Amino acid sequence: MPLVAGVDTSTQSCKIVVRDAETGRLVRSGSAKHPDGTAVDPRHWWDAFLAAADDAGGLDDVAAISVGGQQHGLVALDAEGRVVRDAILWNDTRSADAAEDLVRELGDGDRATGAQAWADAVGSVLVASLTVTKLRWLRDAEPENAARVAAVALPHDWLTWRIAGYGPEGESPLGPRLDALVTDRSDASGTGYYDAEADGGAGAYRRDLLRLAFGRDDVVLPRVLAPTEPGGVAHPGVAGAGVGGGALLGPGAGDNAGASLGLGMGPGDIAISIGTSGVVSAVAPRRTADGSGAINGFADATGNALMLAVTLNAARVLDAARSVLGVDVDELARLALAAPPGADGLVLVPYLEGERTPNRPDATGTLHGIRLATSTREHLARAYVEGMLCGLADGLDALRAQGVPVERVLLIGGAAQSPAVQRIAPQVLGVPISVPEPGEYVADGAARQAATVLAVAADAGAGAPSWSTDVVATLDADPQPVVREQYAAVRDLA
Image (tube, rainbow, N blue to C red; front, side, top):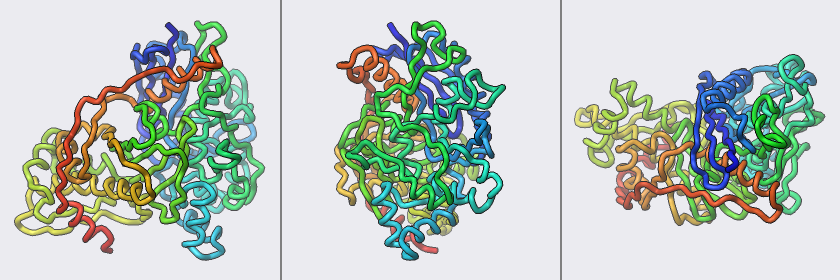
Protein backbone atom coordinates (compact mmCIF):
# COMPACT_ATOMS: atom_id res chain seq x y z
CA MET A 1 0.00 0.00 0.00
CA PRO A 2 1.31 3.52 -0.78
CA LEU A 3 2.39 5.69 2.12
CA VAL A 4 1.92 9.43 2.54
CA ALA A 5 3.48 11.93 4.96
CA GLY A 6 1.88 14.88 6.68
CA VAL A 7 3.98 17.63 8.24
CA ASP A 8 2.98 20.15 10.91
CA THR A 9 5.54 22.95 11.10
CA SER A 10 4.03 24.74 14.06
CA THR A 11 5.19 27.52 16.35
CA GLN A 12 6.72 25.09 18.81
CA SER A 13 7.83 22.06 16.80
CA CYS A 14 7.85 20.04 13.60
CA LYS A 15 5.79 16.86 13.65
CA ILE A 16 5.58 14.29 10.88
CA VAL A 17 3.13 11.40 10.52
CA VAL A 18 3.47 8.66 7.93
CA ARG A 19 0.15 6.98 7.12
CA ASP A 20 -1.29 4.36 4.80
CA ALA A 21 -2.79 6.36 1.94
CA GLU A 22 -5.90 4.20 1.64
CA THR A 23 -6.87 3.52 5.25
CA GLY A 24 -5.20 6.35 7.15
CA ARG A 25 -3.51 3.85 9.48
CA LEU A 26 -0.57 5.43 11.31
CA VAL A 27 2.64 3.68 10.31
CA ARG A 28 5.22 5.80 12.13
CA SER A 29 5.90 9.35 13.28
CA GLY A 30 8.62 11.74 14.37
CA SER A 31 9.08 15.18 15.86
CA ALA A 32 11.66 17.84 16.69
CA LYS A 33 11.50 21.11 18.60
CA HIS A 34 11.55 24.65 17.24
CA PRO A 35 13.24 27.45 19.19
CA ASP A 36 11.16 29.79 21.32
CA GLY A 37 10.50 33.36 20.30
CA THR A 38 8.28 35.43 18.06
CA ALA A 39 11.01 35.95 15.44
CA VAL A 40 12.92 32.88 14.22
CA ASP A 41 15.49 32.10 11.54
CA PRO A 42 13.62 29.67 9.20
CA ARG A 43 16.72 27.50 8.99
CA HIS A 44 15.67 26.18 12.38
CA TRP A 45 12.45 24.92 10.75
CA TRP A 46 14.44 23.12 8.06
CA ASP A 47 16.76 21.55 10.61
CA ALA A 48 13.75 20.47 12.69
CA PHE A 49 12.04 18.99 9.62
CA LEU A 50 15.14 16.93 8.78
CA ALA A 51 15.42 15.78 12.41
CA ALA A 52 11.72 14.88 12.56
CA ALA A 53 11.98 12.98 9.27
CA ASP A 54 14.93 11.03 10.65
CA ASP A 55 12.97 10.40 13.87
CA ALA A 56 10.12 9.05 11.71
CA GLY A 57 12.42 6.53 10.04
CA GLY A 58 13.01 8.54 6.88
CA LEU A 59 10.72 9.52 4.02
CA ASP A 60 12.21 7.56 1.11
CA ASP A 61 9.11 5.34 0.86
CA VAL A 62 6.39 8.02 0.84
CA ALA A 63 4.52 8.63 -2.42
CA ALA A 64 3.20 12.07 -1.45
CA ILE A 65 3.92 14.65 1.23
CA SER A 66 2.11 17.81 2.31
CA VAL A 67 2.90 20.54 4.84
CA GLY A 68 0.55 22.26 7.27
CA GLY A 69 1.95 25.17 9.17
CA GLN A 70 1.57 28.17 11.42
CA GLN A 71 -0.23 30.95 9.59
CA HIS A 72 0.65 34.59 8.87
CA GLY A 73 4.38 34.59 9.55
CA LEU A 74 6.52 36.76 7.26
CA VAL A 75 9.36 34.94 5.46
CA ALA A 76 11.11 37.56 3.30
CA LEU A 77 13.56 36.30 0.66
CA ASP A 78 16.09 38.17 -1.45
CA ALA A 79 16.78 37.52 -5.13
CA GLU A 80 19.23 34.72 -4.23
CA GLY A 81 16.68 32.93 -2.08
CA ARG A 82 18.32 33.94 1.18
CA VAL A 83 16.21 34.89 4.18
CA VAL A 84 16.42 38.67 4.57
CA ARG A 85 15.80 38.66 8.32
CA ASP A 86 14.39 36.35 10.96
CA ALA A 87 10.82 35.38 10.12
CA ILE A 88 8.31 37.42 12.13
CA LEU A 89 5.73 34.99 13.52
CA TRP A 90 1.97 35.31 13.89
CA ASN A 91 2.23 35.96 17.65
CA ASP A 92 4.64 38.89 17.30
CA THR A 93 2.74 42.11 18.04
CA ARG A 94 5.36 44.65 16.90
CA SER A 95 3.16 45.53 13.89
CA ALA A 96 0.08 46.48 15.96
CA ASP A 97 0.46 50.18 15.12
CA ALA A 98 0.99 49.32 11.46
CA ALA A 99 -2.25 47.32 11.47
CA GLU A 100 -4.14 50.26 12.90
CA ASP A 101 -2.61 52.64 10.36
CA LEU A 102 -3.58 50.39 7.45
CA VAL A 103 -7.16 50.04 8.69
CA ARG A 104 -7.54 53.82 8.85
CA GLU A 105 -5.82 54.37 5.50
CA LEU A 106 -8.22 52.09 3.65
CA GLY A 107 -11.07 54.00 5.29
CA ASP A 108 -9.68 57.42 4.32
CA GLY A 109 -9.03 58.16 7.98
CA ASP A 110 -12.20 56.61 9.41
CA ARG A 111 -11.50 53.43 11.36
CA ALA A 112 -14.98 51.87 11.13
CA THR A 113 -15.10 52.42 7.39
CA GLY A 114 -11.61 51.00 6.98
CA ALA A 115 -12.35 47.96 9.13
CA GLN A 116 -15.35 47.03 7.01
CA ALA A 117 -13.39 47.71 3.82
CA TRP A 118 -10.67 45.25 4.86
CA ALA A 119 -13.28 42.66 5.90
CA ASP A 120 -15.03 43.02 2.53
CA ALA A 121 -11.74 42.82 0.63
CA VAL A 122 -10.00 39.88 2.32
CA GLY A 123 -12.36 38.57 5.03
CA SER A 124 -10.45 39.99 8.00
CA VAL A 125 -9.98 43.26 9.83
CA LEU A 126 -6.26 43.72 10.21
CA VAL A 127 -4.50 42.87 13.47
CA ALA A 128 -0.79 42.45 14.14
CA SER A 129 -0.90 38.73 13.30
CA LEU A 130 -1.55 39.17 9.57
CA THR A 131 1.39 39.19 7.17
CA VAL A 132 0.46 42.45 5.46
CA THR A 133 0.92 44.38 8.71
CA LYS A 134 4.39 42.91 9.17
CA LEU A 135 5.31 44.11 5.69
CA ARG A 136 4.28 47.64 6.63
CA TRP A 137 6.37 47.38 9.81
CA LEU A 138 9.35 46.13 7.78
CA ARG A 139 8.98 48.99 5.30
CA ASP A 140 9.06 51.60 8.06
CA ALA A 141 11.36 50.04 10.67
CA GLU A 142 13.94 48.30 8.47
CA PRO A 143 13.98 50.05 5.07
CA GLU A 144 17.32 48.49 4.05
CA ASN A 145 15.93 45.00 4.63
CA ALA A 146 12.67 45.95 2.90
CA ALA A 147 14.60 47.04 -0.19
CA ARG A 148 16.20 43.58 -0.43
CA VAL A 149 12.89 41.70 -0.47
CA ALA A 150 12.31 39.88 -3.77
CA ALA A 151 9.73 37.32 -2.60
CA VAL A 152 7.34 36.95 0.33
CA ALA A 153 6.38 33.51 1.62
CA LEU A 154 4.62 31.97 4.58
CA PRO A 155 6.22 29.32 6.80
CA HIS A 156 4.59 26.35 5.05
CA ASP A 157 5.35 27.83 1.61
CA TRP A 158 9.04 28.14 2.47
CA LEU A 159 9.31 24.62 3.88
CA THR A 160 7.52 23.11 0.86
CA TRP A 161 9.97 25.02 -1.38
CA ARG A 162 12.93 23.59 0.50
CA ILE A 163 11.47 20.05 0.37
CA ALA A 164 11.23 20.44 -3.42
CA GLY A 165 14.98 21.12 -3.45
CA TYR A 166 15.00 24.91 -3.82
CA GLY A 167 16.87 27.44 -1.70
CA PRO A 168 20.04 29.53 -1.65
CA GLU A 169 22.99 28.45 -3.78
CA GLY A 170 25.23 26.12 -1.84
CA GLU A 171 22.40 25.11 0.52
CA SER A 172 20.04 23.44 -1.95
CA PRO A 173 20.42 21.23 -5.02
CA LEU A 174 18.10 23.24 -7.34
CA GLY A 175 19.02 26.79 -6.34
CA PRO A 176 16.94 29.90 -5.67
CA ARG A 177 14.01 29.49 -8.08
CA LEU A 178 11.62 32.01 -6.52
CA ASP A 179 9.00 31.26 -9.19
CA ALA A 180 8.80 27.71 -7.80
CA LEU A 181 7.21 28.93 -4.54
CA VAL A 182 3.68 27.59 -4.05
CA THR A 183 0.98 27.96 -1.42
CA ASP A 184 -2.71 27.13 -0.96
CA ARG A 185 -5.91 29.15 -0.56
CA SER A 186 -6.18 28.61 3.19
CA ASP A 187 -2.76 30.02 4.05
CA ALA A 188 -2.91 32.75 1.39
CA SER A 189 -6.23 33.93 2.83
CA GLY A 190 -4.49 34.82 6.08
CA THR A 191 -1.98 37.22 4.54
CA GLY A 192 -4.26 40.27 4.22
CA TYR A 193 -3.52 40.61 0.49
CA TYR A 194 -5.45 37.62 -0.92
CA ASP A 195 -9.20 37.46 -1.61
CA ALA A 196 -10.38 33.85 -1.53
CA GLU A 197 -13.79 34.87 -2.92
CA ALA A 198 -12.43 36.57 -6.06
CA ASP A 199 -12.96 35.13 -9.54
CA GLY A 200 -15.98 33.11 -8.53
CA GLY A 201 -14.23 31.53 -5.59
CA ALA A 202 -10.98 30.70 -7.39
CA GLY A 203 -9.25 33.44 -5.38
CA ALA A 204 -6.75 36.14 -6.35
CA TYR A 205 -4.00 38.22 -4.82
CA ARG A 206 -4.82 41.85 -4.05
CA ARG A 207 -1.58 43.46 -5.13
CA ASP A 208 -3.13 46.88 -4.58
CA LEU A 209 -3.31 46.08 -0.85
CA LEU A 210 0.23 44.72 -0.90
CA ARG A 211 1.35 47.99 -2.48
CA LEU A 212 -0.58 50.02 0.09
CA ALA A 213 1.26 48.22 2.90
CA PHE A 214 4.73 47.71 1.46
CA GLY A 215 5.03 50.62 -0.93
CA ARG A 216 5.58 48.32 -3.91
CA ASP A 217 4.15 45.14 -5.34
CA ASP A 218 7.06 43.93 -7.49
CA VAL A 219 7.73 40.93 -5.26
CA VAL A 220 7.21 37.28 -6.10
CA LEU A 221 4.21 35.76 -4.34
CA PRO A 222 3.74 31.97 -4.20
CA ARG A 223 1.50 30.43 -6.86
CA VAL A 224 -1.80 29.47 -5.21
CA LEU A 225 -2.69 25.82 -5.80
CA ALA A 226 -6.17 24.31 -5.91
CA PRO A 227 -7.06 21.92 -3.03
CA THR A 228 -6.04 18.74 -4.91
CA GLU A 229 -3.41 20.24 -7.22
CA PRO A 230 0.14 18.94 -6.77
CA GLY A 231 2.88 21.49 -6.21
CA GLY A 232 5.60 19.47 -7.90
CA VAL A 233 7.72 16.63 -6.58
CA ALA A 234 9.89 16.38 -3.48
CA HIS A 235 13.60 16.29 -4.13
CA PRO A 236 14.70 12.62 -3.85
CA GLY A 237 17.32 13.62 -1.33
CA VAL A 238 14.47 14.63 1.00
CA ALA A 239 11.55 12.28 0.29
CA GLY A 240 10.31 9.68 -2.20
CA ALA A 241 13.67 8.33 -3.37
CA GLY A 242 12.31 4.79 -3.27
CA VAL A 243 9.06 5.56 -5.11
CA GLY A 244 8.69 5.56 -8.89
CA GLY A 245 8.19 9.12 -10.06
CA GLY A 246 9.07 10.51 -6.64
CA ALA A 247 6.87 11.92 -3.89
CA LEU A 248 4.17 14.34 -5.02
CA LEU A 249 3.96 17.59 -3.08
CA GLY A 250 0.52 18.57 -1.84
CA PRO A 251 -0.51 22.24 -1.74
CA GLY A 252 -0.32 22.28 2.06
CA ALA A 253 -2.55 24.32 4.39
CA GLY A 254 -2.61 26.75 7.24
CA ASP A 255 -2.63 25.01 10.58
CA ASN A 256 -6.31 25.58 11.33
CA ALA A 257 -7.38 24.41 7.88
CA GLY A 258 -5.10 21.40 8.26
CA ALA A 259 -6.67 20.51 11.60
CA SER A 260 -10.16 20.92 10.12
CA LEU A 261 -9.21 18.52 7.33
CA GLY A 262 -7.67 16.08 9.81
CA LEU A 263 -10.88 16.07 11.85
CA GLY A 264 -13.08 15.64 8.79
CA MET A 265 -15.04 18.80 9.61
CA GLY A 266 -17.91 20.02 7.45
CA PRO A 267 -20.52 22.80 7.63
CA GLY A 268 -22.09 22.94 11.09
CA ASP A 269 -19.00 21.63 12.85
CA ILE A 270 -17.17 23.89 15.32
CA ALA A 271 -13.69 23.09 16.61
CA ILE A 272 -12.39 24.72 19.77
CA SER A 273 -8.65 24.26 19.89
CA ILE A 274 -6.67 25.03 23.03
CA GLY A 275 -3.02 25.16 22.05
CA THR A 276 -0.46 27.97 21.89
CA SER A 277 -3.34 30.07 20.62
CA GLY A 278 -7.02 29.49 21.25
CA VAL A 279 -9.04 28.97 18.08
CA VAL A 280 -12.76 28.65 17.51
CA SER A 281 -13.22 27.56 13.89
CA ALA A 282 -16.23 26.77 11.71
CA VAL A 283 -16.54 25.43 8.16
CA ALA A 284 -19.12 27.11 5.91
CA PRO A 285 -19.78 27.43 2.17
CA ARG A 286 -18.77 31.13 2.10
CA ARG A 287 -16.69 33.38 4.29
CA THR A 288 -17.98 36.20 6.43
CA ALA A 289 -17.05 39.88 6.21
CA ASP A 290 -17.19 40.85 9.88
CA GLY A 291 -16.24 44.50 10.22
CA SER A 292 -16.12 44.18 14.02
CA GLY A 293 -12.98 42.06 13.63
CA ALA A 294 -14.22 39.32 15.96
CA ILE A 295 -14.30 36.77 13.12
CA ASN A 296 -11.67 36.18 10.46
CA GLY A 297 -13.06 34.81 7.20
CA PHE A 298 -10.40 32.53 5.70
CA ALA A 299 -10.51 29.66 3.22
CA ASP A 300 -10.28 26.02 4.25
CA ALA A 301 -8.31 23.28 2.50
CA THR A 302 -11.24 21.85 0.51
CA GLY A 303 -12.83 24.80 -1.28
CA ASN A 304 -15.10 25.93 1.56
CA ALA A 305 -14.61 28.86 3.92
CA LEU A 306 -13.16 28.63 7.40
CA MET A 307 -14.26 31.21 9.95
CA LEU A 308 -11.97 31.75 12.91
CA ALA A 309 -12.05 33.57 16.21
CA VAL A 310 -8.50 33.48 17.57
CA THR A 311 -7.16 34.32 21.01
CA LEU A 312 -3.48 34.71 21.82
CA ASN A 313 -4.03 33.43 25.36
CA ALA A 314 -4.93 29.75 25.59
CA ALA A 315 -2.89 26.86 26.98
CA ARG A 316 -0.19 29.22 28.22
CA VAL A 317 -2.76 30.69 30.62
CA LEU A 318 -2.78 27.27 32.27
CA ASP A 319 1.03 27.21 32.13
CA ALA A 320 1.01 30.56 33.96
CA ALA A 321 -1.36 29.18 36.59
CA ARG A 322 0.94 26.20 37.17
CA SER A 323 3.90 28.55 37.53
CA VAL A 324 2.09 30.82 39.99
CA LEU A 325 0.87 27.89 42.08
CA GLY A 326 3.97 25.72 41.71
CA VAL A 327 2.00 22.65 40.60
CA ASP A 328 1.93 20.15 37.75
CA VAL A 329 -0.90 19.60 35.27
CA ASP A 330 -2.76 17.05 37.40
CA GLU A 331 -2.59 19.13 40.57
CA LEU A 332 -3.81 22.24 38.73
CA ALA A 333 -6.85 20.29 37.56
CA ARG A 334 -7.52 18.97 41.06
CA LEU A 335 -7.31 22.44 42.57
CA ALA A 336 -9.59 24.00 39.93
CA LEU A 337 -12.26 21.35 40.38
CA ALA A 338 -12.20 21.84 44.17
CA ALA A 339 -13.60 25.39 43.79
CA PRO A 340 -17.22 26.11 42.78
CA PRO A 341 -18.32 27.40 39.36
CA GLY A 342 -17.57 31.11 39.21
CA ALA A 343 -14.86 30.74 41.88
CA ASP A 344 -17.03 32.75 44.31
CA GLY A 345 -16.54 35.88 42.21
CA LEU A 346 -12.81 35.60 41.44
CA VAL A 347 -12.45 36.37 37.72
CA LEU A 348 -9.35 36.38 35.53
CA VAL A 349 -9.38 38.36 32.28
CA PRO A 350 -6.47 36.46 30.71
CA TYR A 351 -4.87 38.96 28.36
CA LEU A 352 -1.44 37.85 29.55
CA GLU A 353 0.28 38.47 26.19
CA GLY A 354 -1.95 41.21 24.84
CA GLU A 355 -4.87 39.89 22.84
CA ARG A 356 -5.94 39.35 19.24
CA THR A 357 -9.69 38.83 19.75
CA PRO A 358 -10.63 41.36 20.97
CA ASN A 359 -7.85 43.34 19.32
CA ARG A 360 -5.92 44.62 22.34
CA PRO A 361 -2.22 44.05 21.62
CA ASP A 362 -1.08 46.17 24.57
CA ALA A 363 -3.53 44.78 27.15
CA THR A 364 -2.50 43.00 30.30
CA GLY A 365 -4.30 40.41 32.39
CA THR A 366 -6.43 41.46 35.32
CA LEU A 367 -7.72 39.58 38.34
CA HIS A 368 -11.01 40.78 39.84
CA GLY A 369 -12.91 39.87 42.97
CA ILE A 370 -9.98 39.20 45.27
CA ARG A 371 -11.21 38.83 48.86
CA LEU A 372 -10.00 36.85 51.81
CA ALA A 373 -12.47 34.11 50.94
CA THR A 374 -11.21 33.84 47.35
CA SER A 375 -7.50 34.07 48.19
CA THR A 376 -7.01 30.33 47.97
CA ARG A 377 -5.08 28.11 45.59
CA GLU A 378 -8.31 26.41 44.56
CA HIS A 379 -10.08 29.65 43.65
CA LEU A 380 -7.08 30.94 41.73
CA ALA A 381 -6.74 27.72 39.73
CA ARG A 382 -10.46 27.82 38.89
CA ALA A 383 -10.30 31.48 37.82
CA TYR A 384 -7.44 30.79 35.40
CA VAL A 385 -9.28 27.88 33.74
CA GLU A 386 -12.58 29.74 33.56
CA GLY A 387 -10.98 32.93 32.23
CA MET A 388 -9.29 31.06 29.39
CA LEU A 389 -12.54 29.29 28.48
CA CYS A 390 -14.59 32.50 28.64
CA GLY A 391 -12.38 34.04 25.97
CA LEU A 392 -13.14 31.05 23.72
CA ALA A 393 -16.84 31.22 24.58
CA ASP A 394 -16.88 34.82 23.35
CA GLY A 395 -15.50 33.53 20.05
CA LEU A 396 -18.29 30.97 19.79
CA ASP A 397 -20.86 33.72 20.41
CA ALA A 398 -19.26 35.82 17.67
CA LEU A 399 -19.68 32.98 15.17
CA ARG A 400 -23.33 32.63 16.11
CA ALA A 401 -23.78 36.38 15.64
CA GLN A 402 -22.55 35.98 12.05
CA GLY A 403 -25.20 33.34 11.39
CA VAL A 404 -22.81 30.39 11.49
CA PRO A 405 -24.69 27.19 12.44
CA VAL A 406 -23.46 25.38 15.54
CA GLU A 407 -24.41 21.71 15.28
CA ARG A 408 -21.41 19.90 16.76
CA VAL A 409 -18.64 21.26 18.98
CA LEU A 410 -15.26 19.48 19.04
CA LEU A 411 -12.72 20.16 21.78
CA ILE A 412 -9.13 19.63 20.68
CA GLY A 413 -5.57 20.70 21.51
CA GLY A 414 -3.17 19.69 24.23
CA ALA A 415 -5.07 21.43 27.03
CA ALA A 416 -8.31 19.70 25.98
CA GLN A 417 -7.06 16.57 27.74
CA SER A 418 -7.12 18.29 31.15
CA PRO A 419 -9.86 16.88 33.43
CA ALA A 420 -10.55 20.41 34.62
CA VAL A 421 -10.97 21.74 31.08
CA GLN A 422 -13.26 18.85 30.17
CA ARG A 423 -15.42 19.36 33.28
CA ILE A 424 -15.55 23.16 33.13
CA ALA A 425 -15.90 23.65 29.36
CA PRO A 426 -19.53 22.37 29.21
CA GLN A 427 -20.34 24.74 32.10
CA VAL A 428 -18.84 27.78 30.35
CA LEU A 429 -19.91 26.97 26.78
CA GLY A 430 -23.30 25.58 27.75
CA VAL A 431 -23.41 23.02 24.91
CA PRO A 432 -22.62 19.31 24.51
CA ILE A 433 -18.99 18.76 23.53
CA SER A 434 -17.31 15.93 21.63
CA VAL A 435 -13.68 15.11 22.40
CA PRO A 436 -11.95 13.33 19.49
CA GLU A 437 -9.17 10.86 20.09
CA PRO A 438 -5.91 12.71 20.73
CA GLY A 439 -3.91 13.19 17.58
CA GLU A 440 -1.66 15.41 15.54
CA TYR A 441 -4.61 16.92 13.73
CA VAL A 442 -2.64 19.36 11.55
CA ALA A 443 -0.15 16.71 10.44
CA ASP A 444 -3.01 14.25 9.99
CA GLY A 445 -4.86 16.78 7.81
CA ALA A 446 -1.73 17.33 5.73
CA ALA A 447 -1.37 13.55 5.33
CA ARG A 448 -5.01 13.28 4.27
CA GLN A 449 -4.42 16.04 1.72
CA ALA A 450 -1.34 14.23 0.42
CA ALA A 451 -3.39 11.03 0.05
CA THR A 452 -6.08 12.92 -1.87
CA VAL A 453 -3.54 14.52 -4.23
CA LEU A 454 -2.04 11.08 -4.82
CA ALA A 455 -5.45 9.53 -5.53
CA VAL A 456 -6.49 12.32 -7.91
CA ALA A 457 -3.18 12.14 -9.76
CA ALA A 458 -3.60 8.38 -10.22
CA ASP A 459 -7.27 8.54 -11.24
CA ALA A 460 -9.02 11.74 -12.33
CA GLY A 461 -12.28 10.44 -10.87
CA ALA A 462 -10.87 9.66 -7.43
CA GLY A 463 -11.71 11.73 -4.39
CA ALA A 464 -10.59 12.06 -0.81
CA PRO A 465 -9.77 8.78 0.97
CA SER A 466 -12.25 7.62 3.58
CA TRP A 467 -10.40 8.17 6.86
CA SER A 468 -12.17 8.52 10.19
CA THR A 469 -11.48 10.18 13.53
CA ASP A 470 -13.06 8.56 16.59
CA VAL A 471 -14.79 10.52 19.35
CA VAL A 472 -13.58 9.20 22.69
CA ALA A 473 -15.84 11.25 24.99
CA THR A 474 -19.09 13.17 24.79
CA LEU A 475 -19.51 15.81 27.49
CA ASP A 476 -23.08 16.76 28.36
CA ALA A 477 -24.01 20.44 28.51
CA ASP A 478 -23.92 21.78 32.07
CA PRO A 479 -24.51 25.54 31.76
CA GLN A 480 -23.42 27.65 34.72
CA PRO A 481 -24.42 31.20 33.62
CA VAL A 482 -22.68 32.83 36.58
CA VAL A 483 -19.27 32.22 35.01
CA ARG A 484 -19.98 34.12 31.78
CA GLU A 485 -21.96 36.82 33.60
CA GLN A 486 -19.09 37.60 35.96
CA TYR A 487 -16.60 37.60 33.12
CA ALA A 488 -18.72 39.92 30.95
CA ALA A 489 -19.03 42.39 33.83
CA VAL A 490 -15.26 42.93 34.07
CA ARG A 491 -13.90 41.99 30.62
CA ASP A 492 -13.86 45.55 29.27
CA LEU A 493 -12.72 47.37 32.39
CA ALA A 494 -9.48 49.30 32.06
